[in-house]
Length: 220
Image (spheres, one colour):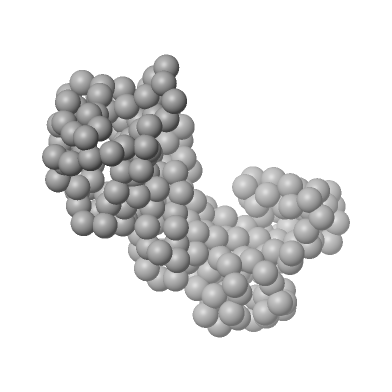
């Protein structure tokens, strides 16, 4: 694949090394002369000095033939602009944007960015067990269907503990499809399945129904 990376900072640098080791063709676009020179000295001539938010720079980089553009600067707005130009001006099939503010995630998706990556959310989701208040984990997006697969953990205070699945007020379009219970095999829930403390409930829902699903299961 030919992959354009906007931003040659730490994230862009290590991403470039990893992609090169996997045999991909990459080009990094970086504004700062010293950073660009350092990347070229170590990785070969793979860094173009310029602004990834400018059409002329993207055209010089050959973005029109790129399979993917990944914007990983420290500026959410720059990442958004670079991805939008790649997607709408140069018809790049796949765009990925790093976001510093998790609240920007939904906006970026509405504006056509294929994938957003928030380090804040990733860290939260990896410490779910140590942070009981963070009760919902995003497992996967089904982008072409506008759905998400999430995991909701049942605590002693969860509103649905002790209730049968058929008695839950789940939001429209949401469905429970697996329950992981300690010391047992995963359970495919039926209408009469009773939820218990400690259950890890895997569900499918629309992004806009997340809060309603959380409320139905946890009472939050």
